[in-house]
Image 1 (tube, rainbow, N blue to C red):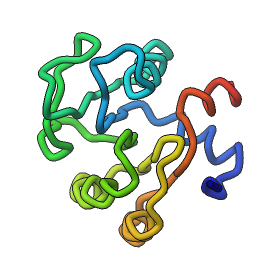
Image 2: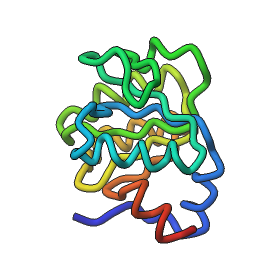
Image 3: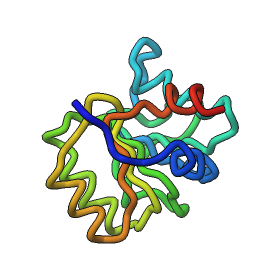
Image 4: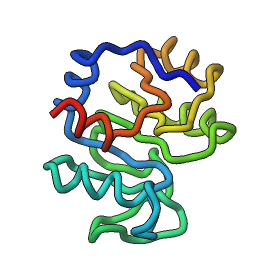
Length: 136
């Protein structure tokens, strides 16, 4: 699976954004949907967990939907199967983040086009932890 066409400089600029909502964040420390946002949190990012089955992850209040988050979100980081991305994109459009980031192995061209038409930058099939370590 290919990934988006962002340059390294464009990806570096994305990391200057600090409020990251993590859709599908896991309570299980063995899952990438837990240790990737934990790593970002340890690097100084404000991680906002979105998972309807949890009330708290990493000591942070967990929201059941992007629409419930009371602060402005810069990046929506998605840990959901590709066929569930469209619903997350539709919610994302309502909160207007600068970037939607689909983690490694996640790609939904239709949903990505919808986000881009709404002025949202889309990164897909890349890991936020791996890219951060590679670039910084």
